[in-house]
Image 1 (cartoon, rainbow, N blue to C red):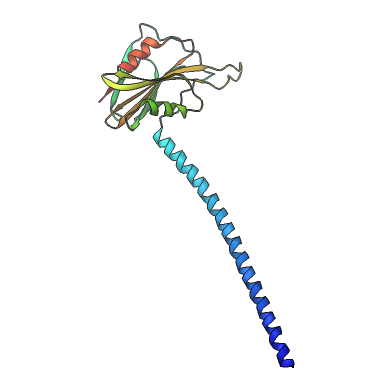
Image 2: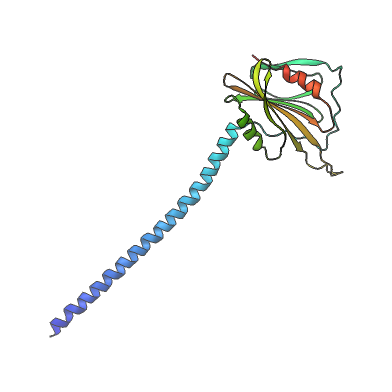
Length: 221
């Protein structure tokens, strides 16, 4: 009689042990999957963001020009201004600039400046610009406001695009006033090389004729 009772008890104990083992294994697997899934998501998100930022940085044009609120106000470029030819052999272009303006940079990025009159030329590899690509490029300049949409034109016998945007400087530390800079941006292209030329003028200053002379003097070499 005792031998008949031992067998069911042992069987029940074995069954309970199996159920406990199965339950623990299932729960452990779900916890591991949940943990792994969370780790994967957290790892991929920063990597994707970084890749997007890098790609955007490599494919878009330079940032927006901004005036300096603490800089002395710049006046119109005089009608008798003397212009010199700047030949950039590294970036393979030339362009006229006003004599006496300070030059900064070399190679692929050069800036000429007279107080808040600013001219910047940035050259790099890139596809031929289109109206859509120019609009998208300037849309990524968070601090810029488009004053005039892109339109096609010809510079030195080659197709080009022009768009006008504006920016405001940081407030002056003493007066709190900001300087609004109106920028004519030109996109020029030749054989896989793209030049983005920004010509910035403080609001209220008339540099139309001088800047026209400068951009029309641009030549690829």
